[in-house]
Amino acid sequence: MAPADLYLSVHLGAQWTAAVASVGGRTWPVTFDGQTRIRTGVWTDPQSGTAVVAAAAVAAATQHPDAYLPDPMAALRTTTAETEAGAIAAVSALLAHVANTASTQAGTPVTTLIVTTPQPWGPKSRQRLTRAATTAGLPEPTIVTAAAAAAASPVLNTARDGYVLVCTIGDDYPHLTVLDATEQYTQLAAVIVHDPDAPGIDRALATTIRHRTGDSADLPGDVDWQTAAEIDRARTALISTARTPVLLPGQSDPVVLESSDLDKAAQPHLDQLASALALALTEADIDPADITATVLVVYDATAAATSIALADAGLPPLATLTQSDQIAAGAARLTGNIRAAAAPTAATTRLPRTRLTIASLNAVAVFAAASVVLLLQTVTTADVSTISTYITGVRLPVANLTLAAAIAATAAIAAAQLAPTTWLSPQGMNDPASTGYLLRRSYLGAAAAGLALAGLWGLGTGVGVGWTDPAYLRWALTAAAPIAACAVVIAAVSPRIPAARLADWLPRMRPPLWPIAAAAAGVYLVRAAYTLTFPTDLTGMVGLTAAIGAALLGAATAATVTSHLGIRVAVGLILVPGYALIVAVSTIGYLTATYVAALIWWHLAATVHTIREAAPDNPVTRWLAKT
Image (tube, rainbow, N blue to C red):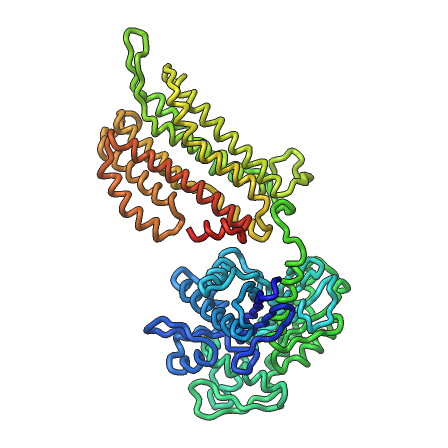
């Protein structure tokens, strides 16, 4: 780390956000108006869409509570297509506020960002979090689970080997997480401790408060964010006092909440801790004696009761965290440990692999069939001129041959993409090959196979029509060569892809199945219409068949050049009717060549994506990311 680099570690909790900054070996909690934490909630102006954070957000929400998002990270994790933009904007605004505050205190911009998540997130959620960070002008974040950050917190003297149990007291239920400290605190199991017959802690307290105001009905629906915030304040206040006043939304007079009320709400769930622990240990596949350290993360007055329950379960002595910035410090420490070691890449990783099945080969089979059908149609519908028994010339759709060759090369790429996750070796489960080794061999093999198939298609066309023309071979290889070149580049750089990114990268490398199939079907139908072959010879509808084929080709072109749904629809609305209107014997060759170009474009984009994943910090990669 350079002396001027600012490492920022941010813990985005359900209620509170805290951060730790580090520059040149000096580390400190980021302070916000003298406090080491701010409310996580974000208020969005309904009129302007401006996001407001921290105390200003809470103040604005008193007038427009429906515009307040109390836990943006939860929204980001469970968002839908309609709410995704709002959730990303909210998290982005929160990260930007924290980063700007830290940069002001440090006198330098953030160069490295670490963010905690409540639990391990999948690829799509991590991508949304990355978008939120980059939208705020921050670097792509390193993501650490809150439980792992808690176990690695520098304020603890917990063991740095063996297995660690982290117990976190949430708004409603305690959570148990088992971590493997020897593997950078990898999560082995996570269990919610709850009594199914008892309400959550916040809900039970809200019901108690309502009863004391004379409302005997149970709380309808979920606990709203205003009620949850007031109960959170009260639960924290009960650490230092036996009684505290509480005023819930809609009430005019406060009521008193006592420590015994909190104990009564939490105890039914703590009574289930032993059985939940047994479940967690079973899920983690370890014994109780394997737990070398226990960490309790608690911000309220349930600490004493929880400590007793954990001790009664026979766990090692507790180490307790009571401040949000301690979690952020743990994330920074853990990330530092990770960065000190060589990050695993595809070259040193073995992905889980399954046996090759018929279903695995669906895409390869579809591409192969489409290519063969187009090749056969090209040969069988060729216009062969003869004098007596001598062939004097042949006219055939060279664009169709080019497309058949391109799809054949794509079929080889689709087969290569299966190599890292399926057992293709006769050694089966005993095959020690790494994912990087398999990627290199499979993509190099795909490059060679693609060129060989294209050459075979070009030579086979000449044999099929009985006319030797070098143009057939030249055009077939012209279509396959760029695809093969892309495969060679992928073979060279893919072993360097970080192991953590492989799960996101592999699906991106699957060729688009239905667009390619639709393009092949469309080209086939147009050719069938103008040669009066199947199915036109049965229906007799030449114009309609050609229009349908052209429309399919237009839709396939739109779907191949981009994966963005909105752009696909917009371009498709232009190309589908446009292709159907202009299709003719004189134009179909150009339309087919356009799709070949689109397919080559897809391979180029996949190659650039691979380079970006393998070398994200390379200047050339940064330039590619901006283009």
